Length: 140
Image (cartoon, one colour):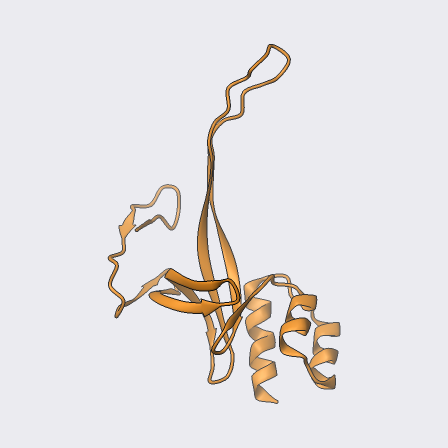
């Protein structure tokens, strides 16, 4: 697997070694096989938050759309496109797919009154906000 951190940077090749962890730009990547609600996922995971009872992992997914030629003079061609999206999984033994939103975290975690109050005051819009909430959740 090759990873480019920025468009102008050099590609870094990660070997398929299950016993290694890699740090790039302050982000930890590791190769693992995890049980999710969709079945087993094998590949590189991103370690977002890992405490004793609760873990938040990112799983990069590559999306590829092939180019389409115009089939008439009224339609236009569509260029090929590729991108990397990250699916986030939350849990302990069996990971659940979550979006970084308050409602998904409420459904997955079943928070107490203090944690509900925290979620009312703080909107989860990115991974850093979700990690801060999980630290608060674990402290109670």
